[in-house]
Amino acid sequence: MSMRFTMCLGTVLCAALSLFGVPGQAQTVGAAAAPLAESIPASQGNSATDAIKKLFSARFPEVDVTAVSETPFPGLYEVQIGMDVVYTDAQVSYLLQGSLIDAKSRVDLTSERLATLSKVSFASLPLNLAIKQVKGTGAHKMAVFEDPNCVYCKQLHHTLKDIDNVTVYTFLLPILTPDSVTKARDIWCAKDQAGAWTDWMVNGKAPAEAKCNTPTKQILALGKKLMIQGTPAIFFADGTRVNGTLPLEALREKLDSLN
Image 1 (tube, rainbow, N blue to C red):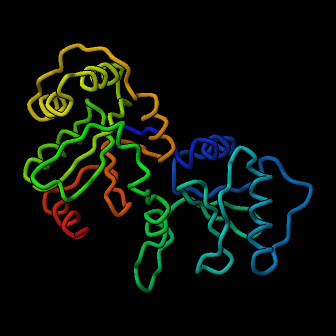
Image 2: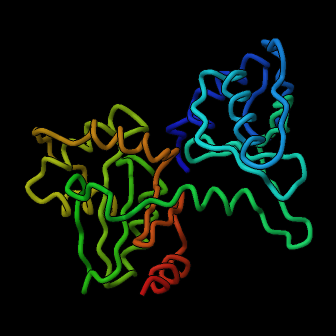
């Protein structure tokens, strides 16, 4: 939401695609910038996907391919790159960025796949690097990556005022402006972190200047690892994520579903 933090397909594929003059997403590309001496024929089963992975890596050496798998569409293969995917044919002659939709069920197969890939073990999050706020029993849990100057994050906080029995872990991710870094520092170093954060995000009261050691570098590295592209990025206890804010009823329904 607010501003992109990482680039499509983890930087390197976008850079590779730029050699062909292809901007953005949902584009098809002829992979002929640096012809290989020979293509690798695809056969059946694992040998086919292994061959495609090898050929894809040869054509795009900057890209770290996680896995290659078949799709329901004959002759079309999914190439997983971290928590993102593109599609290609058996000879890696073309690339497709965009959604693969089941025409019969009208299900967006790509969105479902990305939702699965983007899941994160909540227990693995370094919650000691986050500001902790508990409302009511704190039974529901969510972690949010936020920039102090993010308008959508402030909308989320106004929504959270009407949510009870929740524990919110806030990771300060200052990616929008240099002032975001300063505010993140002042809030983290405040005697009452949660109070300073709420005062700023809800009441518009700027934090007093404060200095201490902050976890900003660690959180920025974590955001990159999790491929967070903007703020807010919300992670729920079941590992699912939402990029952007949620309306009150949608947020309440999601939290209630985790009981």
